[in-house]
Image 1 (spheres, rainbow, N blue to C red):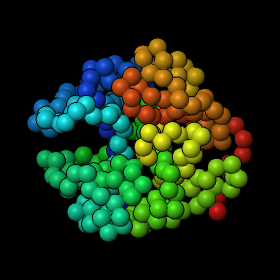
Image 2: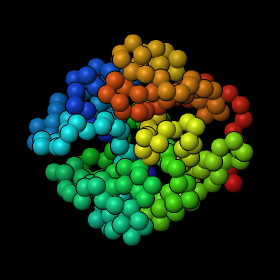
Image 3: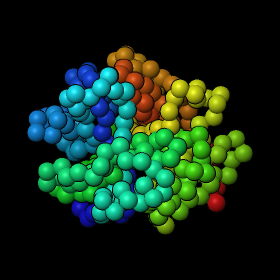
Length: 265
């Protein structure tokens, strides 16, 4: 697999205090299986769908203060993580974790954009990222949820060279970032009526499912909670969920589409 271009979504993982609980939940909802935990890398454990790597779960680092909030983290590709880290700082972002080597798997850093979204940067080594995406059980899409769209748009364009197009819809302020070809990442505005002030800016990860309604039922039966949906769209039938440990994610059935694709300019 060729190295992915700068800014391409390449991987996702989440930290959970109850790893076995997370494995059970996502196994029930997304059909994931899990590999052996890597003790030399903080018991990092990869998730698989049909034998292909789709994500990972990891426990909190030893000595971490308090009980961390579980959340999915999206990693964007970079050919040079150190150079991208400098761009992040220059564009007004902050580094949560400085660039570091992860064995022969690759190099990474964690960052926060100027509006509060946390994300990762991944420079591939032996681990090149998603082995399955755009399919059932795999990563499908992600959206930056922010209260300051102008600042977010400027930041991601400066760091990753994105172009952006705005959806022609008077009801929402929604943009899509690309590198000149296929859409890579969405940006949604967090409105006061839909998002209480205590909910921080975040990046929503969408995973593919065969049936959105059945995925919601499975999530609720396993202790999760529906936040929004299900809703039909030209892109698929989707819903936003919280897992039992509070990590937000979304599911989408891409085969069940309703309506015409919106114009993007």
